[in-house]
Length: 132
Image (cartoon, rainbow, N blue to C red; front, top):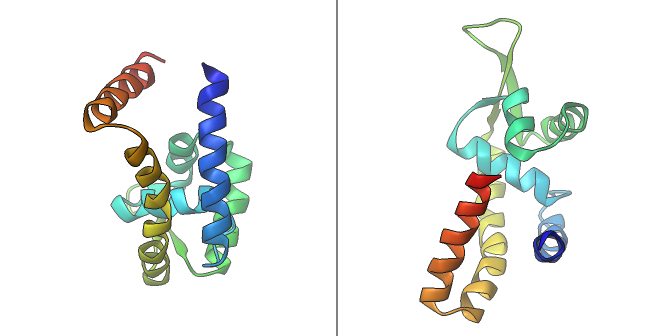
C-alpha cells in the first residue's frame, strides 16, 4: 500500500516539478509552501511541520525563495525570537500561474474515477491520514 501511495505521489510530483520549473519554481515543495502561505502567515517551524520537511532543508529552501522575492520574513510581534514567513505579491502572482498546472494532475485522477469513486477515495484517504 505504501508503495502505491509513494508511486502515485512521485509521478504527480515529477510532472508538476517539470511544469512549474518553467515558471521559476525549482520544486513542488516550493509550490506547496506558496500555497500554505497564501492561506496564512507561518513560522519556519510551522512550515517544516506542515510540509513534513526537516528544519535545515526548510531553511535553505526559504532562503532561495526569499532571494527570488517570492516570500519574505519578519520578526513576530508576539515573540521577537520567532520569524514569521509571508508570501509576497510576486509569490502570489507566481502561485496564480502555477495553480492550473497543479490542478492538471488532479483532473487526470478525476477523469479516471467516477464521482462516487472519487468521493470514496477522499473519504478513505482522509480516514487513513487521520488514523496515522
